[in-house]
Length: 315
Ligand SMILES: NC(=O)c1ccc[n+]([C@@H]2O[C@H](COP(=O)([O-])OP(=O)(O)OC[C@H]3O[C@@H](n4cnc5c(N)ncnc54)[C@H](OP(=O)(O)O)[C@@H]3O)[C@@H](O)[C@H]2O)c1
Image 1 (cartoon, protein in one colour):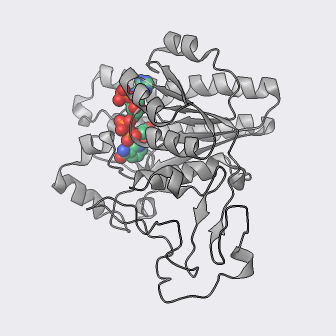
Image 2 (tube, protein in one colour):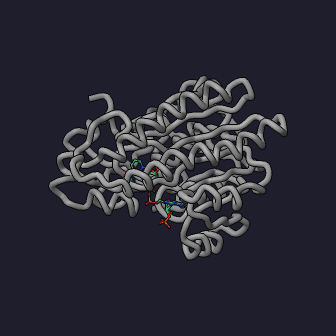
Image 3 (cartoon, protein in one colour):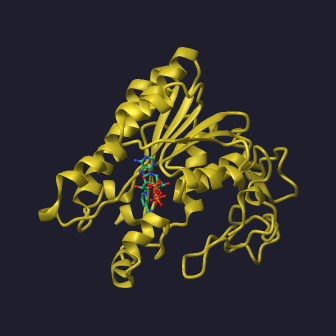
């Protein structure tokens, strides 16, 4: 997969190549998917067209290098973001993308070794190691985190059990991490934004499982359903302070969590058959949507749950 610095056009860039635009000039990006996964196609279907896009689509920002390239300026550079669950998977990929976009990132996760390697990859990222299931430790670690403009509540656990075998431990851990920590971390960050009189954006990483029943997902579906509603209530109460709150709802992504739960080809096929695009999401699909929701490009969007699901929730 191509690295984020190459995918992002510059410190504030976020390149979109729309159907009908000139193909083949998106950096060196064609597809960025891994073998066996669906491909990420930019400008798909544009191979035979050399016509530039209509003027209304030609947003000529500082990172647009040629006619036909359409740039979406996200303007995130210089802001300070806090990402939870930053050690692996979607959170780690998001930190890399934000860092490449010139954002100052506070990376919160549970395994110190993951944070150490992340800081080596992305110098300047501020690591904070804490178990978000521990309320007191979280208060202690994040209480003096300082000003944060952008928050992504991404840390989550998926402890799958048949309904009749759900344990108290799985219930408590799942709700502590997937829901209670979102409330706690968001309180800390939002109180700071309000005290500074600063606007902000919060993205909660939910799931398609928030809105569809999945076998053995009693607790996980419940936490994500609750997270969708939490997102709406946060949007309602924080909107007057110019703090937007949205959720992204991905389908399966082959992160460590995805691999732990969807590696079985039979199980995966049952899910893939329910996804109109016939593929799981790539991490960058989720990251791109989060970046958009963090940016002022989505300035009128709050309280929404945005599927990144290949159409799963439409069925
Ligand atoms: N992968 C999917 O198929 C999928 C689909 C839809 C939604 N999601 C959601 O996307 C988010 C990220 O998932 P992912 O697939 O990237 O998961 P992942 O690969 O398991 O990575 C999760 C990260 O969160 C950290 N984390 C977990 N519990 C924590 C805690 N109590 N305190 C601090 N950090 C903690 C993990 O640290 P440790 O490894 O050290 O525990 C890890 O770095 C989750 O909210 C998940 O529910 C995932």
